Length: 157
Image 1 (tube, rainbow, N blue to C red):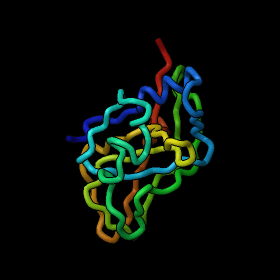
Image 2: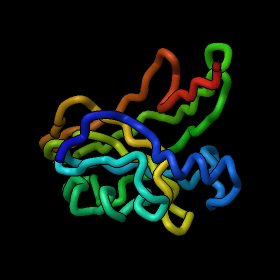
Image 3: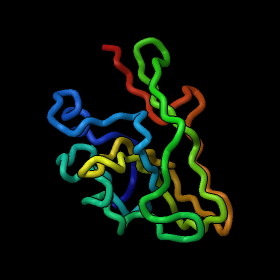
Image 4: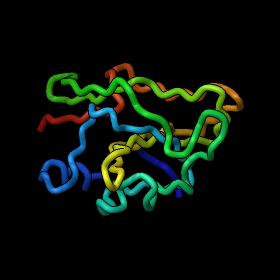
């Protein structure tokens, strides 16, 4: 079991494009960011039911433990915005995430999900590429600055 890539649950996106799944809205203010361990194995092609926070691979048993200012479920994501990036791409951006005075052990990835939908649909998993920890310090997830985005969708053929 391991986190080996970043990605988005495919069936969430297909369901949204077909209008058969609950509506995801990147800028609705309902997004949360949670930190996960390398003990989870993401499956981006899993069923829609298994593509939600606290279900299957996104179960809280794989999430970083409560400690200091980090609590399971993560924290609200602010500053969400969608914009065209390089011609033919969509950039989804948000403010960086920071947990001050936290003791977090071995965080491998961040999962952003809609905290209001039922089930709590996962938008994206961002792999850090290594485990990171804090000991009564600030754990910061700094999103890409070039392009300025949490994730980018290339719409060019």
